[in-house]
Length: 459
Image (cartoon, rainbow, N blue to C red; front, side, top):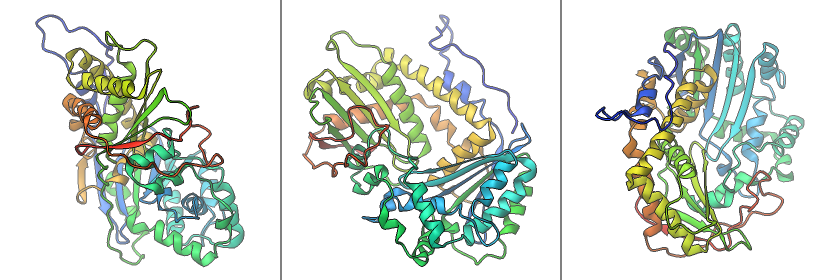
């Protein structure tokens, strides 16, 4: 992938008098790779996305499935994590752990993450082992090993996996999205899973991790056509399947408002964000700008505000926490801060600085094979490309939209508007038990006792 590193700029640099205002973020994003992606739907329904990066003698692979912990049946929380780990227990052609052993033995790296509605595998390997790795993957997708001993091992490992646990508290995310199933994000696998019959395990794998719903990303120094043709040949003997697409779910026009148990002067405001990469990127900017925003004259002394973004690819959420204020004061402070980001020219400088920071980070991701594969697996795994063929990386990720400052300020204005609307009371999602609570959650804890949901315009 060709392209020079992004230019170095100084945050908050003054514009000389009489000179046109420079948009630093748009300038930085113009240094994104100019290469193309080749997309192809294979015979078995698998969506293949190929990118070329000739910077190093390595290849990166991303594989995503549109299933996650929110799909776990009640009483079988943790099932998705266990199934995802069980796919590494071998196949007809591989011994248990054989695929990972081959990658690690060649000096490669692997990772797995389970989100609310997406499970993702990633790996970085020496380029000479790319074809063996892709061949091994076909066996894992179509002929996984399933037996009682291996299944119990997978369940045991799943109890220790905490990937995808919401940073903002599973209860807040579940309430904001009006989806109680999202509470499973903080639950651990339990004994009910160990008793599943192998036939049931196999059926769940075939249903939840089906190739015709998956997206495979390959980034390598080879040409796009060479990679696409070789991968297509690996699946040519598979039964034909129609590709099943899963478009992003629009977020409900709500905001969840609550205070941690016994802490009336701490308030949390949680908004659901659209599960698309461009919406998540804009939310990053809004969140970072809120954390950098200076105090305004007249703000209550001792008041504190902090923004955290839960970047789940399909169920993201933005949470603003306040402390040192009564509930009505906290609400007013958050409205004023968001309105300033949306309307105040002085605060637009804060937005522009954060846009530049996020643009640098994004361009850096696009220039490295593993981070590019991971980004494409997250973004395109949550939103299929429209049709097979070639498409520019900038177009696939809609970088032109990301470079627009008004899209960011508009989002801040919409978030503020939701807090200005009438607030019909709504019960929060069932509280998490102490044993299922995320140990990495903020000290205040995820339990909202004084909670309400506010309805307003759509995101």
